[in-house]
Image 1 (cartoon, rainbow, N blue to C red):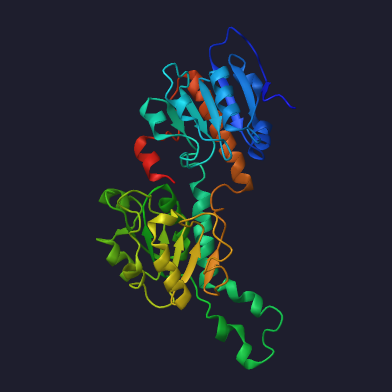
Image 2 (image 1 turned 60 degrees about the vertical axis):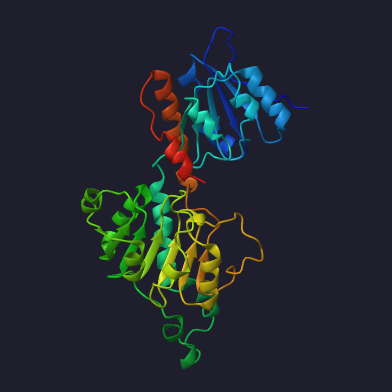
Length: 351
């Protein structure tokens, strides 16, 4: 049996213990960027969490007493008894990815433990994916395969007449949400000379003005005056399910609706109903339940373009993610301010 703990450096006099609790393949990827010389003053321990069971996980944390924990996709949820222990040594969790709820209980932050994620470092990759879905739907990409081998065979099969492709140039684009991803989208859409409108409750008018985006007075106005809606609003108790059937039907026939934000912001039953009608062109990277069932009603609809929640880190984006985390670790030990800190408000908005 392989040892659970592999020590990269052991020093009984070192009080700072960094535990890297990463699962494959991110563990292998991150280790390529890790330079132990940068952390020569601390004890670095690598945990094999791929096959770890809950008892081993708790025992390892109790034994090692990390002051810093590095987590990512596949890291188990921190045990309640560990989080609630009176002698908790943990002071900082450096999470490589975005959402932290599947690894960290909320009360860990309430106890004053610092938590960081990838912050805004890969907002551009999500924005790119949103634009990809929009362009793919406007050009009717889901139906291309039906014409690739026999275009112009007969006049009635001519793709131009049947695919109903459209251009992005000059369209009215509405953004629901105006965080880092939405702001990145505005930059990417400028060359297309679109009319940009956005709605997000609580965002100051000055921020919309800074990005030359017209603020909508309501979600109803945003949907009723847009040819394309890009959903990137944060998920909160107030935004959950706010995009309902009534709003979706305010969009004009053949409009584009893309969601790269949070699946639960949209009433999925309403979206499926309208998607089955074929009234809208729909692009999704996030869903209320993930992964979706093989019987998901929109899986093979010609007006729908689905992706498996991959808008986040691209292969080259993983490099950005790892370097971002390593810089945060260095900042922590130097006593500098961390980037991408997860507050209780940010925690509550995440999925």
